[in-house]
Length: 451
Image (cartoon, rainbow, N blue to C red):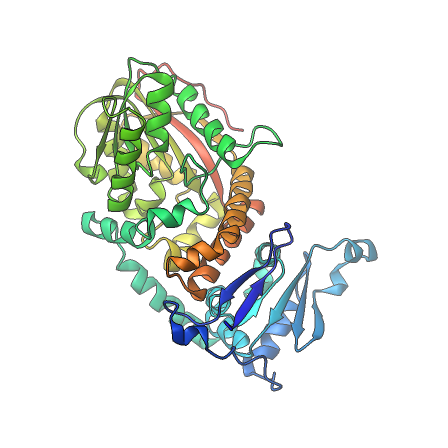
């Protein structure tokens, strides 16, 4: 019988059994022994420091479970009795003392990698991560001399993921070329891998994706007279929606081989090949002149260094009077500097070469390289938290299918952590997502507003 660990979600999703050994699932792994449970020796040198720091938590409450023993970790002195009763709570189940070593030596990255390796678990991982985000200042007390070296090494290797033309293809391949079948397991039928827009409480994920596409098309006032260029095809969702519903022509580009093949097939099946052209080109190599430009959550793959290049190219592709709309995941201004100097779980394990710009960074890049004017900004970060919840539920429901594709326990736990990590960040406003509309100087669209 396969050894398993169980993830139970408080949202009502059924527990997901994950194979316990990293690597491709083989016959030998099907008979592998379970991971050794928490040893009786819990006095790792880092444990006392970790526990002492966790006791400084002032917003929320963590319960640490070790061998059935429950330890409450929070700063009781900072709470009134009413606050203590209503505290935002979560539970960490320590499955190996190595968890403390990872957290002590590598901080939050160590916690993420320890989770991937099955050293700890939680019935509600998103809630744990939300509490950690709320108490960032207290958690900085978990320091060891090794953390500086670990951070330095992470920054060095992240620096190798620069988004040159070759580097961008390599980085995109590592994430988006995992297989179209894999992404179909958790995306809705539109195949939009970006935040939806939930306009009504009963909206399905698919409807939220359609709402988002409609919002983009309407804000750009698309018409059959428009020729639109899209940077970042994805699986063809926007191009199909715009051409089918607005009659415009769309030229769209991706550097992912898997996405290029999939999008062309979808467009042909939809009977829209005469209105949509799918290129496999780097955005820097695009030529032509277009009425409108759309880029949906692609700017995050540009990288900090290449933001000016990206906005200069966007401006060069637009006709006089043209407009562009970006859907972009953004970093708040007050977090941006620290983020630029560090490497987080997402950039190391999910999106190599990724970078979340602040709105100010994008506006600076646009105005320093072009005559683009910022016309409108709409923030809808909490909608991304709901989108991620829906993806996570679908991911777990299709866990058996994902395993059948050859993905192992470490991969499934990594992606579970990814969904929860991002959901927590959007819930706590540590990141957000915006629709930002820019226009050439003589563009008649939009008025400046922020929602």
